[in-house]
Image (cartoon, rainbow, N blue to C red; front, top):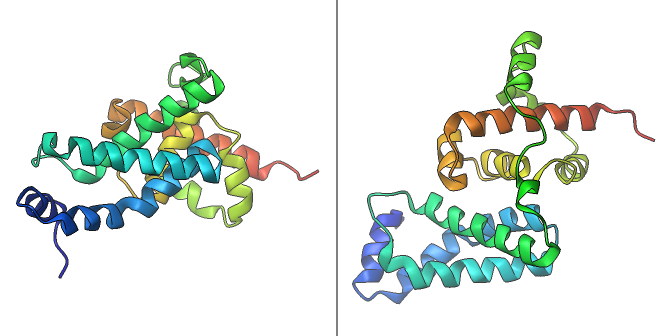
Length: 188
């Protein structure tokens, strides 16, 4: 029988250790894939994923059951990845910001009539997309990965990244434009 996340948490709170194992099983692959796309390394992604679920286990008693468990776990994963990247590579905080300011790209998208949600669908070559993802900023990579790989709404993405929905929407559109440019560039 499929239990909801809240039912699993309540069952865990009532002493059922298998309920927590089911939560881990439900989200493990998604968290690993998300971590891998951000850090680009299998071993580090495995370590981060393990750290994420240790943090979930340590903090699950604090979880507000009126909230969404999936976004809570992904928020922990995102924060763990950011902490890892800062420690590992000494990336300045400014690296996580976008290069451009304002809404220039949003205006460009509207002028060109590009439908942002449809633009990503045209990319068929998975390896090319993976390489292209590594060429955009981390914040844009997070938005694209959460939206398309983890099939989250922009509202859920904004909650995980602790950004307004409009800011996430802007990052999303800029990322799609950059990916389109990268993927449509002539191959050398």
